Image 1 (spheres, one colour):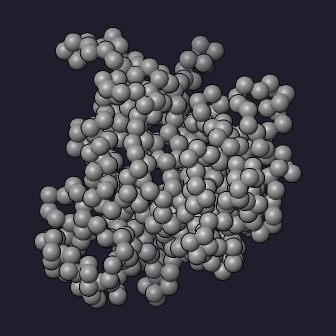
Image 2: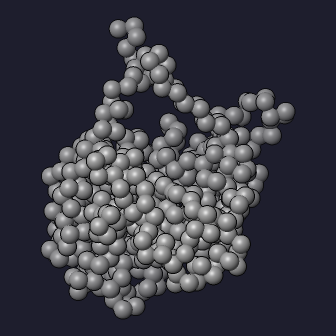
Length: 474
């Protein structure tokens, strides 16, 4: 969409405000709104100024001036604002006009540019399956003398005896019993459909939606794959529309990986493939799972670099509450066709040559999608460049249920890091693959590690309520 087309859209839709957005290191969108009367061609040349020192991990106060440079291809009408508003994503530049090395969206674009310089292919496609919960009530508090959280849902398995409904209507979702039941057990068909309608209006191609495995309103909506940066843009749009549609229904949505103890968490399984001028490069008929050697090497790169990669794809302390055995969490660093206990799965049902892809199941939605997708691509390309063979390294294929293997057999399988600090240690030790082509910089990686270690420390020094169970009467 050209600048003139955006200006025409503002007039056609009687847009009152233009909402310029960018994304920080955390992956959360930030925004500044301008009256549409103040937006003209010069806005798209000069950009929109903002204070970079107020964004964690960006700039010091002594060099805080930064500029959003709008990307007109991302424009869509906000479905929630009372005053007609046009949303436009932006890249971040310095006042001198240079692309900012710590801008996640610019890093994603540099990863796509690097792919083309390698000669491997022209386009990388990504498709995330981002799961979430829809709750009716969320409360939490952390203070000097108290620490707790409490969530509730009318369909939760723990509410079979609740009286506050004015007559309990039963049909609750059992623990681990929420995968695709029909109504009345699935009470959230309409809210998910409304989310999908709004997403479609905003430009996403919706493929399906359904209730997920966990109790208390776990859900998933799948949208069509696209190129790396566009998919990251779409994921931010997806999370924004899911959260605000839930709010319209008097509910609250969260993409937190493990909001409930004792049931499945929410992951973000990411499907990937590489094409060259429209031709798929991951397909080879008759081979294992119909995968080409290039795809096998790509998997090798993902699994070899996985401990470091997970610092970016699972960047929260809560991520590692999900990454434990027993809840469909892919903690085993192996690959397999169709096997959901493996970190890398190759879908084999109803797959065409163009649909042939790999699925990295470990990530979750606390990841910044621009950074996560870029890092996955860089790991895969390193595998292709170095011809890393996951079979030779003992990474599979494993076509049996790993959770049912003996302890001795499991001991031979490499697992994900156990904590965020362990993952950050791995990233500090193994980051050269990210630096290729200047996609990531050492400054970015060092800054990112420092920022995430600070988050981990905030959690580590706080008193956990369960410690009272364990130690109060010591």
